[in-house]
Amino acid sequence: MAAHIGRRLCKGAATTAVAAAAVAALSASQAPGVTADDQGRRSTGDATSAPDAAADDSATGNSPYYTDLPPLNSPNPSPSAGPGSGAGDGSAGEAGIPATVLDAYKQAEATLRERKPGCNLPWQLLAAIGKVESGQARGGRVTADGTTVTPILGPELDGNGFALIRDTDDGAYDGNRMYDQAVGPMQFIPSTWEWAGRDGNGDGRKDPNNIYDAALAAGHYLCRFGWDLSDQGDLRKAILSYNNSTDYLNTVLSWLEFYRRGTHEIPDGTGPLPVDRSDDTVLPGVSPSAPGATPPARPGKPSGSRPPTGPTVPGNGGSGTPTTPPAPSTPPTPTDTVHHLENAGTGTLTAMAGHTFAERVSARAETEAGKAVAKVRIRFTIVGDTDTVFTGGESVATVTTDASGVAVAPALVAGERTGAFAVQAAVVGRSVKGVPYKATVTERAADALARVGDKELTCVAGGEFAEPVAVRATYRGAAAGKVAATATLVTSADDPAVNDKGPYFKDADGKAVRTLTGLTTDADGLLTLPKLYADDTAGAFVLRITTAGGATLDITLTVEPAATPTPDPTPDPSTDPEPSTDPSTEPSESPAG
Image 1 (cartoon, rainbow, N blue to C red):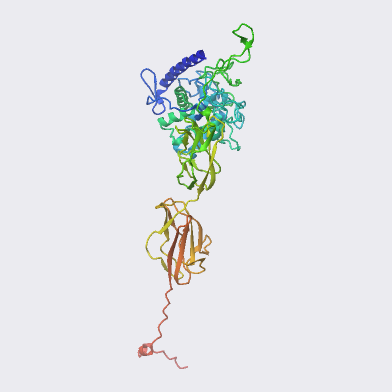
Image 2 (cartoon, helix red, strand yellow):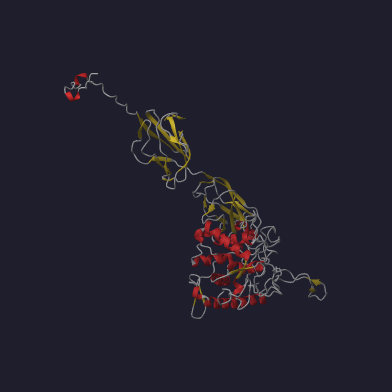
């Protein structure tokens, strides 16, 4: 084992040196913040090391990855090189991405651009990770719907040269009921896929072996926590969260820059195959320059990484009795000692849509004897038909228990979907009794309404009100946006029955209506009603506005009688003018016949 680890360390140093050379050659158009010094060494703007992230809280479980680096020259294919051609200096062949795989990356980018525009996810980052994790799904060996022809599995994560992650999926994804293995072209471990998985090809399934599903899941994974991947610091965090290794980060960044310089589509199954892996395992009998070569299944475990089993060796007592070397013993981890989880005091979980839950979910890890267990990772998962998320926008959060064995989840932020859902707490890496927490999202509400403006609302019978009715809704003094409201012309302040006379609204057909439903306040809590009209009935009327939450406001509307038309005055004979004596005005007589 020592020799194996030593070889891995030597190889890691060599890989880092080659990566630095590649970065130096590409430094003219580096990703933001990436430079190379005058010795050709890689610099990323700061000297911080990779964050302390547990393997079971990463996408891949920190599984091995391919360390092949891109060519140093331009990846643009020569004019004479056809699709998939690896002729010439090798740049064109390495820059080619199998058609279905490339389409999956670009579709994932388009989806994230719509759903999380602030993330600024480039499809070339997915391509870089896909190259490092699986050689672009083993050179594009996928079916028409994007599913890999054969499963792509990483080694058992049994703690023997790798992270220790015991089975979390009962073998559902990786076929292994003892330990987890990274699965598919983007190499998700089952426990991460369980919450990060997405349906990218619209077939109703979330399959880690499908490149469309896996690429979309990887995009969402890289875009969590509000990360902006156009920012170098966030880009580093996202890549390191996928696999917590500085060498991994450098290798992915090298391929990211390579693909940014240009790439092209090649037929499925003709992509170049990777050779070198970070665990010093080489795929046997595969030439990276042989387009269309059928790669063997990725070894489940690198040779020499675990003690031999099966064959026996003579015992030291000289009796010749065959014995089997004992398996190495490892002390139990805190996680191994957890027997169950308990509710650590979480009460009623209720919040209004769009608001943050006042109560936070907390769980306590305990041994069988009821003693607290510290330093255990607890995964909180939101389940059910809800758009509620944790602070940061994700439906899952992993928190380490403190000295009292308690882990407190981030605050829940209610979405717009009302109703009940649940939060499930479980121990990462153990199948022990978890804790479900029931939660409810209620509709948005207002507890107060006030009219905007103070002009009297009057009109003449048969006319229309010139002043619009506008009100503002608040909840606990703050603007109550997106709150449902109803406006009704009631009989009186004491009689909520709908009035059948007086002011009215008009529907789409111009007919009189005296109740409006489906109204909603705007983001500032403002509600402006449609124009009001009046029939021929004069008097004082009541407009009642109510909202979800019980806020009510009565507004008085006044309809004045229409003005009575004044009749034409009767002529006064005494004021009639005298008959005219002007001969010119006298009627002429007809000449005698």
